[in-house]
Image 1: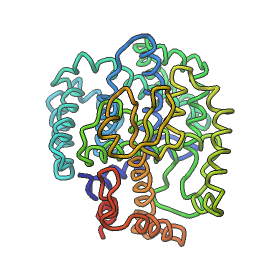
Image 2 (image 1 turned 90 degrees about the vertical axis):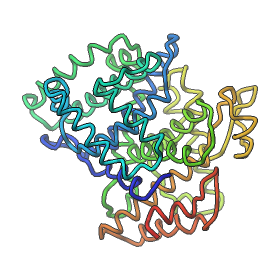
Image 3 (image 1 turned 120 degrees about the horizontal axis):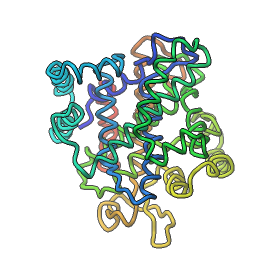
Amino acid sequence: MLTQKFALKIFEGFSIQRWTDLIRPFDIVEMDKAGEKMVLAYIIGKCEEQKGVFVDWIWMIYASLFDILKKIALCDIKAPIQQILKKDYASEYLRLNEWILNQYKPLIDDSALFSQFTIYEGQRAGTFDIPEKSRAAERILSAANKFATMRELQMLSVVNEPERLEKINKELLADLQGYLDLTGLQLLMTRQKSYDFIMKIEQLRFQTRWNQTPRVPKTSVLGHCFFVAVITLLLCRQSGQKMCEKRLINNYFSALFHDLPEAVTRDIISPVKQATDELPSIVKRIEDEIVNKELVPLMEPYFSDELMYFTSDEFSNRIKDKKGNAEVVSWEDLNGKYNQDDFSPVDGRTVRIADHLSALLEADSSIKHGITSSHLEYGRNSMISHYKPGETINGIDVGKLFREIIGE
């Protein structure tokens, strides 16, 4: 079950600043890095699938959750320090991993999830072998992580003297050499179309949510998308339904990309979208037109249709019919006749719950830190009143969940 303490612990990822020993032209936070890493992993992974490589997306999705949990526990310990600990002080590194797990044991009441976390930490420490079927996914995720770090370094180079970055840059390039067999990474490193696409996605790192009001911590659109993705994953577990693999994968990446249009339209705040009865549908139509004009041409053909499926009617429960067209279906049918990979099912309403839960925490957290405004108060109260006590959607008692999350 997603508890208040666990949700707030994950939310701490928005407060962890990166590269704190360098001049930074903008806030570079851990949650944003995690979001960009998973977008890159998607691009590289889809390219590998085109070559006939099996990608264990389920392993990768859970790895993204466990990685952010570890980052939150360790805060700003540099990766090279962790690598030295792992290589030269193996016993202490294992104790450190045990310490991390102990921090989360009281927060994770899903015993199966905690067991997965424990195994994953063992795999990363070298105690357990990564399963053969998951090794391609592990390499893709590692390559995505290193390239995301490289992109941050390139943005930092604008305001830092070259001497500050030279050693880090050389080490990163050396690390990336070991992954250049991945075609998607080659395309990114040589700045092909996929690089242009990720440049658009990166604009979501610079866009601040709730831009009309002071707030602590500030959250970007990209970081918000990653938070929604991991919360969606946890809510799918909480629903109690046995979901096919494609459904779990679709749910995660639909959540990760649910605000993709904002890369080219910017964030249009909800009160403005709802200013008139017709405006929401008009805004959606304009967003779709701009995405088709500015983003779709930057997508590789082997994932563009899937991304558009993720972002079109993103908050509806849906499947693909025999002709490949999206069709809105009920939760009951998702769990019954459509709970098969061939139908590419998506629990869009669960993504919407996670999206609203993120907005609720963004407002409530700031208010409780003493930074408030009429916008935050209105947003918090709107999220709470939107779901009545006992209102169950996609197997989640949303009214109860939201009130528990903010401690009411």
